[in-house]
Image 1: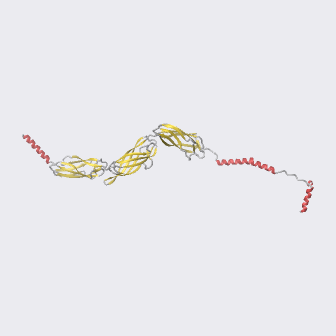
Image 2 (image 1 turned 90 degrees about the vertical axis):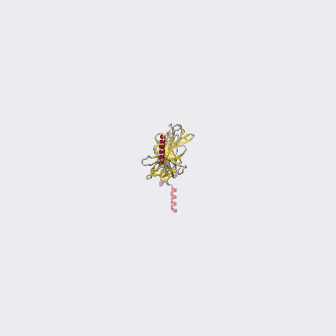
Image 3 (image 1 turned 60 degrees about the vertical axis):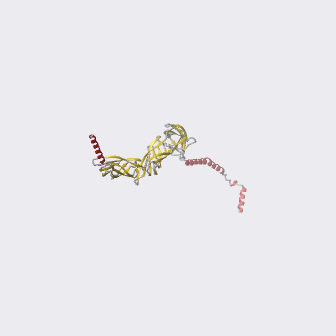
Amino acid sequence: MKNWLKIALVMFCILMMVSSASALSVRILKTDPVPAESGKYLTVWLKVDNTGGDTAKDVKVKIVPEYPFSVESGWKTWDDIGHIPANDIAIVDFKLKVDENALEGTNTLKVEYKEAIDADWSERDLNIEVESKRVDFEIANIDSIPKRLISDSDDAQLTVDIQNIGEGKAEAVKSKLILPDGFEPSESYSDTSNIGTIESLGSGTATFYIDIDEYTLPGEHLAKLELSYLQEEDQKNVYRNDTLNLLIPVKSTPLFDVVSSETTPSELSTGSANVELKMKVKNIGSKKGESVRVKVKEKTEQPFSFEDGASYDYIGDLDAGDIGEAVLRFDIDEKDAVVKTYILDIEIRCVENENVRLFEESVPVMISIKKESTPMPILYVGIVVVALFVLVVYVVLPRIRKRKEKTVKPREAPKRSDEDDGGDYLESLKKKKEI
């Protein structure tokens, strides 16, 4: 019985000692703003309670900032409270920076506290609600003109719809398209686009113009979309950057190249006739081309004449990697042609999925010999001189001779006086008398 009394007395003393000791607790009294906003400053007031029956001495409280909370240089991270009487409280405040990428919802702030110099630190996680005011971009849609992007394309229009799924507003949004190998901007600055303001849950459109190399393989090609914008933080605008992945789809298509060409005869001169141009056409694409036909684009500035049906040739179907031949025939104008290499523009046409596709290639045709010919004015003069000579010798001169022969008569011998007629003599005397 005495032992039980001793035990009860000891337990009572222990309870009295515990009730008279200090007991600290820490919780959040309030925050400003409520809720906390991503990318902005936050003030936290902590309430430290002494629920024990004795004074808490040398009380210290400190915060341990971890993502998404941080402190800037010069800001305090701990507070030496000192004494807190029994059943009393102390209030301390700390200033924090909320990360711009803080997740919306409940986030944790770690707090440590202790009493007495040689005591261990106690920890507690305090919950703080954060409302995300950050900008959060994602690609909503990609469109293009033409609808099917294929290799060997120029000035393809790429339209990208960008959505802001964040709570913040983005102003002065600019975009730049970083293209992978096999793609190039069609012109200077055609890989940039000014979008403007994108409100929270709003969207904007960026438009680009690109060229696709003929050797670009079909499939999805990874590009990067760099975005720069202004976002309001702590009552001031701050420049921010973001990068999004963008997949550019390239479809399978037939694609043609003139891999070789030759003429018969091999050496062409001005005035050559019935020239035969033989071309080998290869399907370097990734898809079969049906009803392939080759046609030359005739130009009045070039000295080539194609008769009906000689300016085009039908090859047929070409699978990917196949080679076909086309033969065109023409004459070279002697007057207009000069010794040089001319470039013939060739149009290759095929059918793909019941759609007609056109491809443009070029073939060199070299005229290496100038055909010698007599200048026409000199030739005409020579002909005229010869004709005049023949006319004079064989027509004019003979006629002159004949005329002279007709007009010139033989001269008669004079009569002697003794042979004169007596009547004539008398007649002359009479005339003298009359005079």
